[in-house]
Length: 114
Image 1 (tube, rainbow, N blue to C red):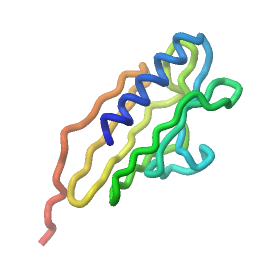
Image 2: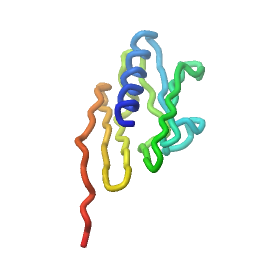
Image 3: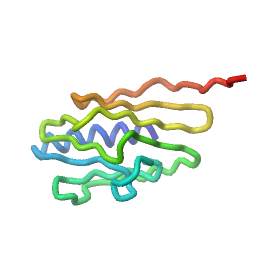
Image 4: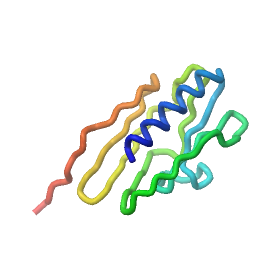
């Protein structure tokens, strides 16, 4: 699922640059939740849906600091963003910098605190 989310972030950035206007990548639930587990969608400046992703990974939690990320016409996000993908004892973090570059952390195992 992390590959799909990285693809979506890169598509959003490229689409904003291609159009020369803002596009928004947000959680499927009406762009109003920080739970991205049910998928995400790409909207143009007029809030028309350009594309959507609905990954089906049972037991995976995908949470972000915000419900949406807006890329301006130069491909820069309005803010940096960290998205966590968690399943079982594994966590991956996807980060978007203020320049729009996407970075994926290596898998980490959450240690047992006994």
